Image 1 (spheres, helix red, strand yellow):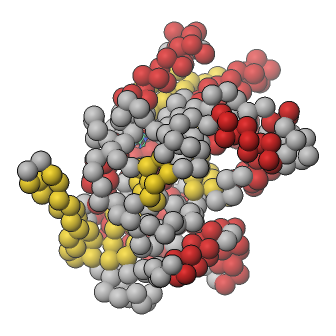
Image 2 (cartoon, rainbow, N blue to C red; image 1 turned 30 degrees about the vertical axis):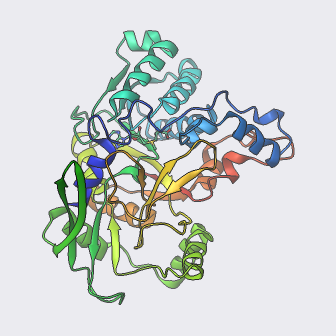
Length: 402
Ligand SMILES: C[S@@+](CC[C@H](N)C(=O)[O-])C[C@H]1O[C@@H](n2cnc3c(N)ncnc32)[C@H](O)[C@@H]1O
């Protein structure tokens, strides 16, 4: 299946994109001094000066420690509302460990006054990133490591099997976009026509070279079927709700479609990439941690470059070049192992409702700026003229919360 192929390209033990020693999740050379900056231009200048070469960085890193403080605040609010005593935090794909460091720092700042008791599990699939995380946690929180209040697991979250009934916050920032997806096709682009085919990837080797091609067959895979079943059961949006959703997504999808039309590549609607591994994640988390809250954040849309994969919810396939805004894109996900990131936008409306159907729990989704308004302190990351990049940048990101 396509998801198995993507898993291999991103996570295969030595050559996968996230497994390489020069892994592509980076760190700023120094934290940004938001309060010292006049406004947008000064922020961009410092951002670019401190940006690492050949790596991506995430909001947890750009806005450290405040992005983690915002998530920490969400945890504390829920903790008090629900009158929990002890809690566990399980972070999926912590990358460099920056979010964990900020959240733990924030919980510790509030610990004495609010009698907070927690342990923290970091579950990271990449061996090389895991080594860095272990070192970072040792350096920052030696006594919590010694007391086994912080534990690092080098495995996929789907293999993490520590069951608990303790209330658990399951956190993952920018992990939905790298979850392997499947691809479905239909006969034409007619919206009313049902999805009919699932896709497999055939790999042939000849003289040391790999030849890759897609094949399609009638849908019989259980996860593709689950996707379709859930899709048919999620509440249909009326025109008002649809307009609100589109409004929240902003101009990204429209610009993307317009750009493709202008460059002679009409967006294709006869195929769709679907988040099958995320559905597995929802089921798995709910089975082993029945008392969990979910806190996931990621991209809800992209402006697709001219050279890109064509289809609904298609991934950006890119590799990072040296400069902060330099990257190269591919028009297929059928790439050699480890050469590029395969990064999907998430349909938060679908994810929220499918999560509710799979787990029986209530969930909500909101844009990054709404999360900021509810759980951040307004002057965190504010520059002198009032521009606040933590609220105003990353406009194409959303949170899924339960
Ligand atoms: C884009 S990075 C985000 C890193 C970090 N969460 C942040 O926001 O800075 C995605 C991370 O998720 C990890 N990852 C992806 N799939 C995973 C899985 N199934 N289980 C655990 N970690 C995973 C990758 O190795 C990588 O470190």
